[in-house]
Image (tube, rainbow, N blue to C red; front, side, top):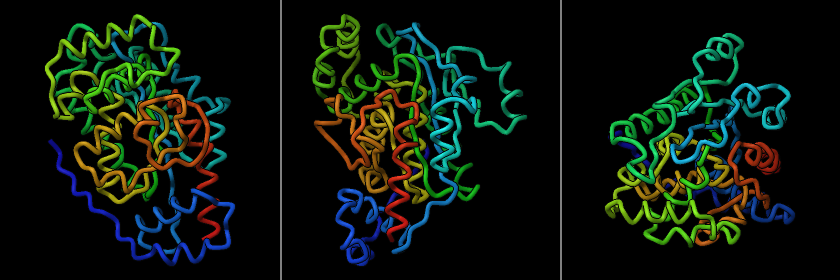
Length: 317
């Protein structure tokens, strides 16, 4: 297992930032994000260098009703691409474990300097209703892949990342993983409109069948997805490199739950792009967020919309 050295950022610039923003009452909770950025970068004038929006995409074996269209997602006409470009974010889609074969697309996208990055572990996880979602070696490989993606961005001069996850079944698996990590019934993580869906009863029975453990890597192996495991590695490595991390969507929030189970200090480097207001998992244990929106699918639009607000705070400093 990769080791991470994650320290708590010094707060010595807190009072200076508060004085600078004393007359900016309209900023509200964004003042806390300004203080967080000053603490991470150890300056009263923090700047974001080459920020990137990394979308980890992986399908889950218990659902087969939809697929991520990488071509449409990365098209210059897609909503996420336009929003990321407007916010100054470099968009990159990482194939963590998509069911669809991408071999015929890799050369096409790479030669056009697109943001497609093939890191497929397997073509979707196994059906976790009947068996573990992945093997232990696959889970470790996914975590290591998330670390390597962050390292690429770090050595390219990036100091801020927006991270999100998507894929078939990613929302269901994220709620399931959070429930297991918190040792709570799955029903407490479900929005009211989903509590009667039969699939969730099957997922709860799957939780009951597997042995109870407090080891986050084992829980990722049993119930997680390739995208969630990569997000976990990415969050930990970004904190290790003292980078600012903006998370978007429920899969990224589930990865944060796993990451702070391993290293509680990781939350000092992390902020949510939006409040996941329809998700009880977030409401029961919230962290700082930038805006009040409800884009839970985690395809990066929330992060792209939140970044201009963060930049406005930095301009005030």
